[in-house]
Image 1 (cartoon, rainbow, N blue to C red):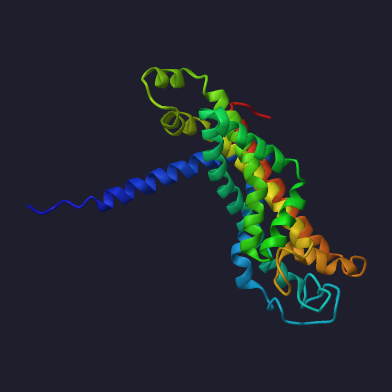
Image 2 (image 1 turned 90 degrees about the vertical axis):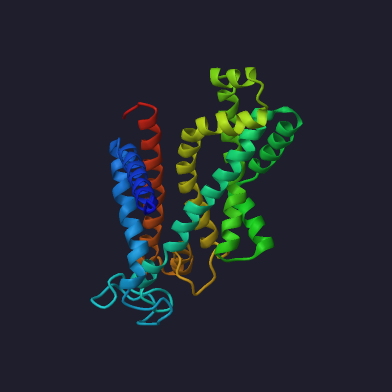
Length: 295
C-alpha cells in the first residue's frame, strides 16, 4: 500500500490557521473609526517603504539639482541641501524606521514577557531585584538612555536596535509583572497550585498565555514610542550616518533651509507623525475590541 503524504494537508491547515488569525486581527484593528483610519494610513506607509525604493526617480546620493531647489516637473518635492532629489530620499528613507519600530518592541515583548511573568509569579528576592532595576532604568529619560547606549555601541541600525530594546524592555517587564500579579489570583492558578505544580510551570503554562492580550496592546503602544525615539536619535545624527536616506536624518539635514525649502523637512516629519498615530490607533482599536468596548 502506498504511503499517504500528510505534507499537503499540514500546509493547507497551516495556511487556513494563518488566514483565520490574520482575519481576526484585521477585524479587531478595524473595530473602531480610529482603527480603520490607522489601518489605511499604515497600509500606505508600508506600501511606500516596500515599493518606494523601486520607483524612486534618482539615487539617494545623486546630486540632481541646485541646493534647496523648489518643486518642479523633474523634482516633485524639490531638492535638499546638497541638491539631491527629496522624493527619492523620502521613498528610500522609511524602511529603517519602520523595521526597527516593529522589531525592537517585539524583542522587548519577549524579554519583558518572560522576565515580568517570572518576577510576578515567583516573587521573593528575584521580584525585588527585578523591580528595583526596572525602576532605576525607567527613571532615566528615554532619549538620554538611548543616547548612552549609542555612545558605547556607535551608530547604525544594529546599535539603534539595541538602544531601542534597552529603552523599551523595562516598561514591558513592568506591564508583564503587573498582569501576572493580577492573573495569579485567578481560579485556574489556584487550581494549579492545588495540583502541586511549581510556580515556574504555572507561570509558563497558565499565566503567560492568559496575559497575551495585555502584552499585545502594550506592544502596539510601544511601536509608536519606538518610532519617536528612533526619529529623535536620527535627528541628532546618531541613528544613521550620512549619506544614508532616513526620515529623521532628513529633518536634521534640511532644517537649515526650512524657510527656503520647507517640503524637505515637512514631508518626512509628517510621515513619522502619521506612522506613530496610525500604529497607536490600530493598537487602541484592538485593545478596545478585545475588551468589548467601542468609541
